[in-house]
Image (cartoon, rainbow, N blue to C red):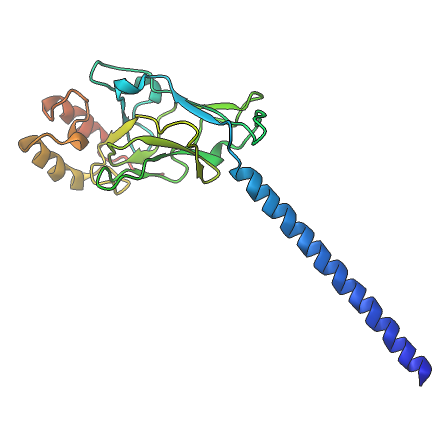
Length: 228
């Protein structure tokens, strides 16, 4: 009987050790995951800048299929300007963060009620490439997006907006006036109403301060563009 009791006790100890080891492993993995998540959120020392001066107030013409204007050809009241966005990505110790994944860096509009119906297609506003050895990446290629926005543009990294730099004074519009992810016949009545009514930023597709005949070719060319 004593031997049976001792055997049961040894098994219990072994089971307890196995359970403890498993729990420790789980805690370790959870700790590593939480640390990685925390590091992804530590964006001190990061800066986002736009090539065009803020007072230029550039407007980027987008299409859901990426057929709009590149950031190097944004419009403004004074003509075409380079609105290239450059991000310097740093760790919380201000060390350049190299080879950070492009799809984890994207653009959003600043959350201001009543200023937009801007919509981005899936991965439609991500950076041009992973960060280089100096932790730098850019946005120059046309975005895949629709709708319009008169609020500013924010750079987002791994779900966290870069607020060390002020939001960028870049606005957006598109032949996809209603922001449903496709430029089609449903957008034409909206344009017609804006053409005959008071000034509407969303339909000033050529950025000349008026909704007029010059905007019609851009609207017509955009019809049929949809998110991939």
